[in-house]
Image 1 (cartoon, helix red, strand yellow):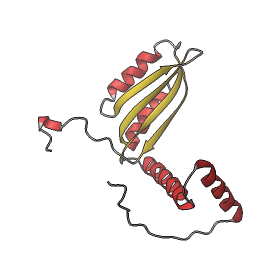
Image 2 (cartoon, helix red, strand yellow):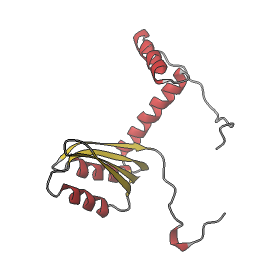
Image 3 (cartoon, helix red, strand yellow):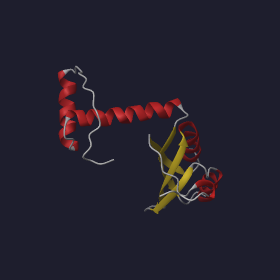
Image 4 (tube, helix red, strand yellow):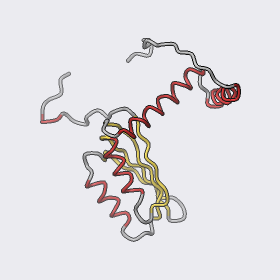
Length: 154
């Protein structure tokens, strides 16, 4: 969509305690939002995505980010096998070797929120994984190639 076109908006009014409004204004300034409305839109989108994630079946895109001890015997193979078993949901992964025998891996996923949460839980709970987190967004990755061998129309 062109940036020149504005989507229709609805105006609402909210009441905030002084302290909460002061904190909101400080966050707007420190993060560089153009307005309170822009900041509140961002917060609402994040909250709605989290709600959709918790309710389970909407297809979403996101990342599973983990930090693990690369000395843990068999962990890298286990992680690769888990990703391979979930090829429909695991789009790609990237890992970076860090200091102190640690590796950070970012796994790009897409699928029903409940399914990708189960994949994230299985990955994050592996012995040797130090920490992990899944971040989902209510968006989709376009198909990488036309399905069924059909030529893409231009």
